[in-house]
Length: 445
Image (cartoon, rainbow, N blue to C red; front, top):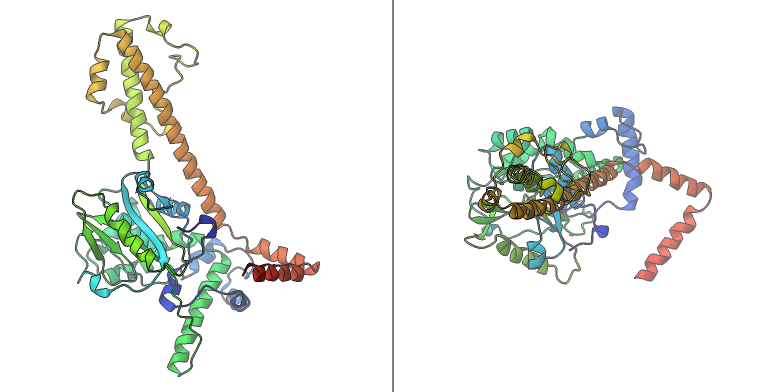
């Protein structure tokens, strides 16, 4: 798996056109083109940060790194409830078992190459929502949509649910075309676009158009033949596992799940794809689309509070002075430091507490006349609540960190970098630094 620090800014554009990422030599032409565009269309000057209206009016799609935090934030902003993205560092069984459950799908990033078309279905089955990729650099969003639109009973939010219903009878190609015109999704995707990202995409499109024109004129241009990186999805749908690659015309049925864990079918497929690059020292990234732990943690806390309240009430009925025997070292109404009612800070409402689903064992204990047994059960509930509250806070902290990573990625540092480089140049320090970097690179190889 790719080390997170080594992630590249990857997009399907390279997979389609067979070109590599923009080189340093392309920056100056891009800047010139951007300056002309700015003068003509009123966009921000080329080395100023991209403005909200620049992203809104830009027709392209930016490249997005394979950072799980970005994918999780995109899902939340799409309006999808109770779903998040985790990175899978290895495909060892113990690592897969440690993922949040259920696992709704996998997103695999690899250097794309065409698979055998005969593996594809003749047409897309009715029960499978699958979209082709008809626009460059949109593979991250398309992989997400190809997963979440196949999760049973998930709350997609108003916008995605409406889009899913609108496209339910479309072909994969028409769904892909519809995504290209789905402004809601495009704006969230492009919220990660910085000014130079936009320039590079526009310049790549211009170069592609020039190359196509050159071929028609009989000119021969440079072609490295190197495919680019691409996101695909592997998803359990019904009783089968499917490979949903937006660059393929139809989905691939990988096998029947039966009584197995669907990951046991998906893992060998991914390993086989990785082995195809065994001699190339390629990097791969695997992400898991999983259920957000908060979906279960908050109801668990509400059930705990309800059971604790029932225990307190029952103890008061059979042992009026029970509080004198309880731990009074904590400072709250009951002297136990626990939550005993609705708490917006933990996301539990009065309705959640009033309608708990208690186990048969808990119900039996709460109906007991044995004060000692009730006191022990009450202490167990308090300890359980401490654990649940800690897990809720940990998950909320994770979400805050994800939002911070996304905000940092969305911040356009281009202007600051330009100012810094100009200062180094004026002080005569830029050239020595570049020469030093070049020597270090030569020694490394």
